[in-house]
Length: 354
Image (cartoon, rainbow, N blue to C red; front, top):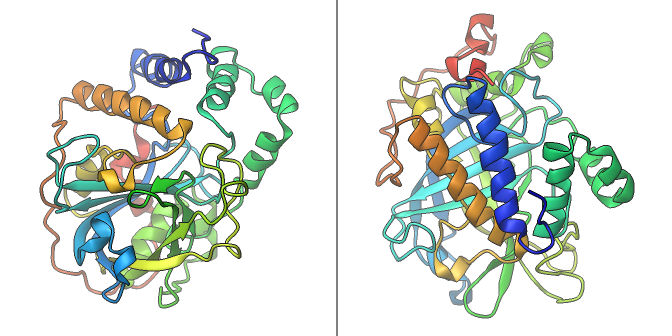
């Protein structure tokens, strides 16, 4: 199994898909879930509007268009039954209606972004990720690896920060992408200043599915907005393409606001919404060639994420095709009091067996 030096990509695929997902399926997990970020807080529908006044040199790839429909999955890197307040948050965005040949599913009209609520990844390369995963998944003990890699340990500790709302967190793309032929960028998503500040009852934070409760409450009351940024690589030495633990200094290269993600008022528990979102697959390689992901971790993700999505969706007997349109959005709900009914805290998706 351990071939992290010579073939980290296939070894990572074996560990995440064959071992991790295989063990769960053998133990009776149903439906089959993602290997990571498998706790869903909610699926939201919205729009991704490119800034209308972008200069010509920023109108690259999908940013040369005006707007797209968006499906957004909020999640945590933990299992569905575990508390989520101090878990690493993820946001996956699928844009629908993007023309052009894509890198992964070539004839699809979709492009994906995947971001997390921390500005760096906890290992540098695919080989490092392979060794870290082997320590936990195969050897069953991360401690020796973390003792020998203090930077990884520190980043993992820092990633355990509390977030009080998925709509109030800032997210980073972690890995570089091309921006046309000869430039590279990283992505960032931050709440717009206009985003509402709904207060939940204080005891709700102690609930295992707090972040779901918060997301549902906020979007029932009002819309939410995020600003999407690109940060250009300004210096090769201090902004490496294959050293994911190194942050790109935002003072040396200030992120540029290029688009706005708007999630209108909605009920994330509308009939069929959760199942629709869970059946989707997100992959940073589902994008245009102008935005090709960079670095060894990105290359490994292409194989691992594709194999995981294939196993999950074929096991669950759902379509493996990319969507051509978002799930139809119902009329906006009426504003509600922010008191959460405890029975609402546990939707079916939040108690899936693991």
